[in-house]
Image (cartoon, rainbow, N blue to C red; front, side, top):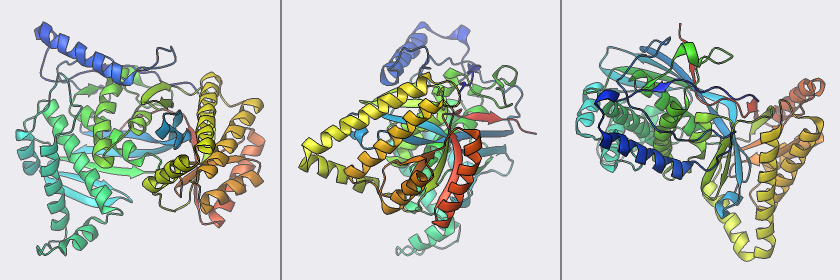
Length: 479
């Protein structure tokens, strides 16, 4: 699959290049080198580096886009190979998933910041005056940005989010029973996770306002829709974080996306590499807030798209050269990642002579698959598809030996196998989702897809068709 072009410039924060000191330039170079050493692991011509030197110029405007109305989208992700083995320093392969989160940002004049996300939480608002008071006391280093979280700001935001959820129903009697009303007020599916997602959103907004030199938080409305199942291991939170970071950075003029030079083949705008580095940086911090200990894989896949190879804490990123179409099937069974990791750890401890070779085999599968994805050209040939299918089937059987499958996942794999297709779980297992890579033969494709979708629905699973390895974050034109 042809990768998108990255073009444009990064602008920034109350400073002209003509007035920069040698010390400031040197500081940014050191920062750039630090970021490269932390994230860049490949010098391949096919690999676009995670970070390059960020250039800070005067705030600008987004040519061709209306700054009062911005639309962005970002993909989810799937783990193709390497689940659980990656915990033991083996290789994992992740690809962008053609199910996307879409964000519509509008400037308002009501003195409020409002966020609404369908299927996640109802409309929640905060007064800009309350957020501005937090902005006045927070700090951000424009030279080095941030690599650690501001715990003081997080603590204050947790209080603000908690009180705003209670205020939605106007009930808070102080004896602990207000927690039930709080959950009902926000209609949170998972209050512990999703309320912290709101904290991450406000953290990002306040920090980026400070980065852009704003003295007040503007009135804004965020409307979010997502095609990505929440809590299914498909990168829904990272996709949301990338959308938020992209839209806020663009609105504040910290990045400029030039519609004349950045338009891709389908009329959407792809940020330039330096801009993507900035988006990825801030999205990673939000994902850390939500998950506590994020690897950086999810936000990187969502920002850049394509394929990421992750091994020994290092990431190599390429654009996928193979066009893969899949059915993603949600079992509806909630995952328990911690429990699945513990199952593998226990088996490895009890049966090292059995489990260690399995982890080595999964590592081999990941590396073989990565080579296929790098060197293909368009839809897979019959030989390439056969190889990919065999790798997927072998990987699933090995994951079953590790003890991380589930009857629902087994049913999905059996249904796919009966139709001549290979399937495997993706993510932690024990529930969550499975993927079926579809035969690229066009004649078979439509028939197989419809038969498969029907059977999965009859089993009360939720199937979705999508492609893999497509573009990362995109800016969409507004009317």
